[in-house]
Image (cartoon, rainbow, N blue to C red):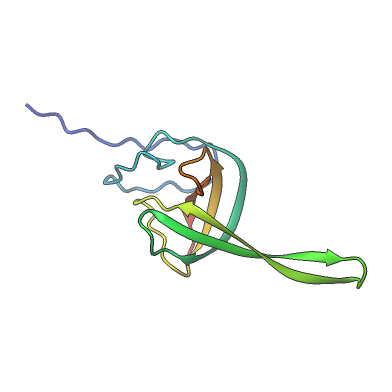
Length: 116
């Protein structure tokens, strides 16, 4: 008899709702793979999701200029890993968390997707 391997959802240590997808076979998934999370977390918007398992997430922040006593808007953009169980698309609000380097430019992974 052949045994079917059931993917186990692990606790990532953060207060996020885990995905219920049993079809995720991504080894870089925080819930179904062996990737551990550490460090910083951000909330941003998916700007592009055209590449395979990769998304570009950006957010704006205010930076104070003491000379003019005003704030200016600055943007941050990161390439993040987009697991198959989350599958965020352009325009989604997501929470990203830092992990070990997955590739040359990806050091973050999407851990939660909010509504558009």
